[in-house]
Amino acid sequence: MITSTQNDKVKLVYGLQNRPRARRKERKIVLEGTRLIHDALNQSYQPDFVLYQPEKVDYQLIAQLQAINAALIPVNDEVMRYVSDTQAPQGIVAVFPMPMPKIPQKPRRVLILDSIREPGNMGTILRTAAAAGRDVIILTPDCVDPYNPKVLRSGMGAHFRVPILEAQWFEIKQYCESLEIYLATGNGDLRYDQVDWAIPHAVIIGNEAHGAGTYADEVATRRIFIPMAAQTESLNAAVAAGVILFEAAKLL
Image 1: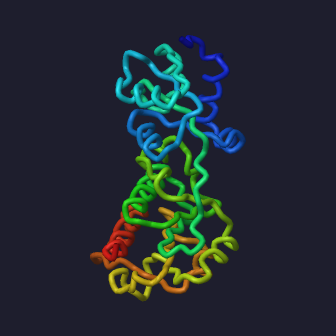
Image 2: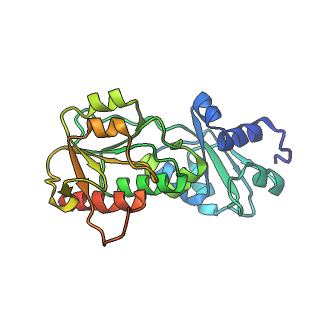
């Protein structure tokens, strides 16, 4: 059992939880809690190692990990609290390789997120996009790290069900050149429920406070809007994404 926060594996987990640069360098992420780890295992991802408290963890998850010969390392309460990103640790964290998704060569249903910076919003949008059948999700450079612990938690396993890419705008433009690109904006000229969602397309959702940026406006081929009651300025980015994506998903 590991009882010291100075243990090398403990320090690695702490760094991955708290430093985006460490995640990029190591190409690894930390999943915390039974649900997230279970989701990753169900998508055939295998952990490098697992830190857990025997008295707190669901025995069925431990059995599932033992069945794939995962490296299971018991730790005490002090260590678990040190590596956990939550106020009430569930007693298990696992280090996984960063997902390397297969990129669709001819996507039909793309979601582009422009400068989404709030982790809870990002995770909720990723979860919504996965549920709504998006082929791929593309993040612009100013977005929050998609492997931030809070994004992973609120994403509820979306990271393992849909490809998530980070790209520059010139790469996005090239990748989506054969698609109709709809920018969600308050001053659009086409209602979201009047779009022909059957054609191959991309949807751009912009920043929570300021909307999409100049590059998004240049790339977009159409601007769509969600009708709202008078004196309502805008919707939360995650809510707007949900409304639009599930309208498009009616054709699934």
